[in-house]
Image (cartoon, rainbow, N blue to C red; front, side, top):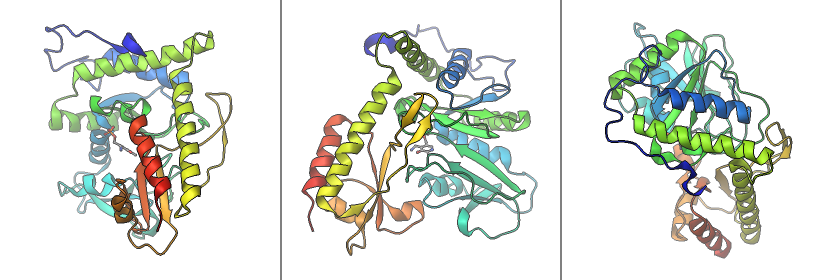
Length: 344
Ligand code: PMP
């Protein structure tokens, strides 16, 4: 995209804490909010009408803000927070690291057998597996947080606009700008949006305006590139990224076939309303299972100079590992070379 996403920030800008005092999320930059709505409309992956947008320092901060907002602050017991294993490895750590009196980690949603209220974190497509998922408990006293970090057309077919009570997205995964530390929540309920905003106020008194302005520009260029493609001006960001992911998964499957040490799920294709055709599921991670008699898959890969994250972090056995596929071309090719050369 060359210089298209460059912005200039004058020295006098961003002096105040406030962005728009009439907005519930008073530190939300209007330009960023506008581009979030536009991008969701262009991609068709989320309903934005009638939603409150809450911006966060990454979706990480919004996960905590949502836990704070959904938990009852005068309950006798902290509410249980659950997610179906294998779950995103940070969930248990972030839930418990401050030993909140409001909420606590309750483990794998599939084995949660208490009667009381709970919060279920739903990640779709899932990190680490890459499948589309939904809540597993479906009880009337459950509260849901949908983490849709990977619900973008270069990772998964867009089937319909998501329409949940709390939906989280992040530039870390939509465009890879993890260093901007910008995520956003689409929230149906005004009280929940207020409480999430309060959490961020008490935590960091808002979210970097400079980052929001950069993120706004990045999202704008992504939306522009899609509209330009429709006028035949070039490949859109999503088409380009889809092609990269498709190529990487091809290389990966060939390498896995060559060494025969691991199994990886096959994903069904699905109709993508964004590309208007059937597309592949191309997860940002590969979730591999060691097939031979290997106890610790992570250390086996480590011996072959491949860094991965072992199954225990995701609530399952050490025979599973997750490897990121979003590194630079150079590192990805090194990974493929090392994987192909592996033998027992
Ligand atoms: N949710 C999921 C499922 C993730 O994979 C990640 C990043 N690994 C996050 C949230 C956190 O992202 P952020 O950089 O926006 O804090």
